[in-house]
Structures are given as C-alpha cells and as structure tokens.
Image 1 (cartoon, rainbow, N blue to C red):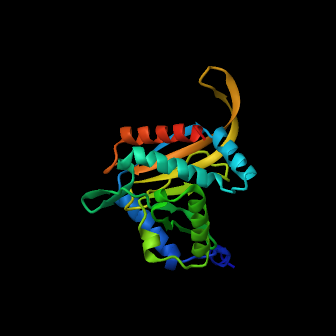
Image 2: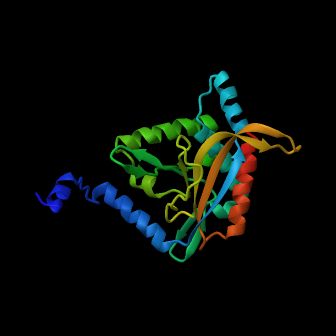
Image 3: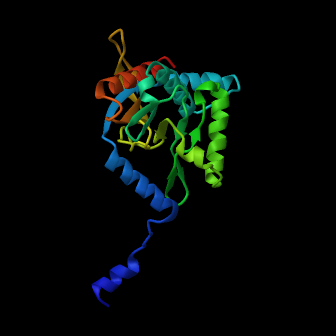
Length: 230
C-alpha cells in the first residue's frame, strides 16, 4: 500500500459548508474588510467574584459573565463611540446596547446571538434572557435579527487557561471583548502593599476605521476600573 493511500485512509475530511462554511466566510470577511487591532489588559476581579458570592447568598444566581456584561454596559454608556456598527462608509453609533454573546455549539460551531436592549434590563432579567438565548441557540431556533443585529460582542474563554487572545470583530460591529482566564496572582494594591488577588485577562479587538487606539484604550481601562469596583 502506498503512502498516499495510507494518508487518504487516515484523513477525516470536513467540508467547509453549511453553518461551518458560513462561519469561515464571515471570519475571513472580517479580517479582509476591517482594520483590526487588539488591546490587552489585566484587571483585579476579586470584588466581582465577591459580588457573585454575596448575590448567591441572597438567592440570586448569576454568572461572572453576567456581572461582566453589567460592567460592560455601564462602561459603554460613558464611551458611546464603542457601541455601534460600520455600515458601508458610515459609522452608526447606537444609543441602545444590543449585546451579542459568542457561544460554542456542538459540531465545532460558533454563533453570537444578540440580546436586544440589554442596557434596559436588570442584572437578573439579562441573566435569564442570556440563558434562554443560549438554549434557543443550541436548538437551532435563533432568528435572523438575533444572528445579525448586535452592536457589541462578548467572547468568553474564562474557563480555559487562555489569558489574552485576539477575538475577531463580529462585523459590522465596531468592537468585541474577549474574557480570558482568571487566576490568583500577587497584585500591587493602591496603597502599595502586595496582596493575592483574582486577576482576569481582558482583550478588546476593534475596527480601527471607526475607533482609534487611544479611545479604545480609555474604554478598556475604564472597564477594568468598573470591574474592580465589583
């Protein structure tokens, strides 16, 4: 038996078509069309985890991702130039936050359905709506607007050992936040002493056509401050 025959027998060929093909095309299009840049930061998420525990003691069960979404929405209100889309030759900034959540599905598939008007919901309402969105995504019941109507995306790899990464902008949106691993690390506190804290890695990818590096850096720094407040 020739080497080529052995290789052919051992290959598992997966055609890039259907949903997987659409995802591949969209990723390639994003890199081709947008001037993408990523900023990375570490932030002290200790207070955020303490808030999660405190809420659980009150019977309110929310995830760290829910709390980050809450901090993100508050920060976007102070940085409206980050929340929007690039449509053709126009930057369209949206007063409402239509928040997309990147979700991994069986079969190596990735979707980012949108929670519309996330900024008008309470923490608990948004948490319930996110879980319902995830359930419908897994059952293939998402609508076209939910798949295409977002103004900002969250991509969460917090359960992995990936600290920082460069998430691809979910075109035509302006920016996407990547949530990386949280790990106990020594941290210099504002008073100068060193303490062991829960340090979270964050990554912000953005379309440089719509957002410059300085404002993007200011947004990410402000988000870290918001998270550190819990």
